Length: 124
Image: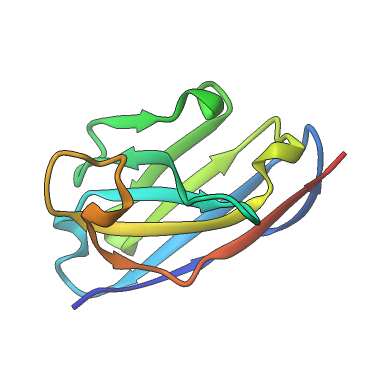
């Protein structure tokens, strides 16, 4: 079993930066790929970023490319999402998820483990 806990969300002005973290329990976390998703009020949960188990590959949804960076520190059992040049449309609850069952890393039903989410609010 793996438990995920997100932190680092908050209120920031447009153009600002935040780094959200996903801390995991469980010795197997370092072998899991991890994705970040977000859900805005009244909208479906959407894929944001993905990183392979060793950090060798990362993928992003088009709307965050060049602004967000996903990284991980397996020694600390933590995955990060650095968010720069934030926009009001980035406002959402951000969730990390681990251990996708298949290759569809952008699909939330693929993931076995989820955190509780952290709120990110970007003011204009």
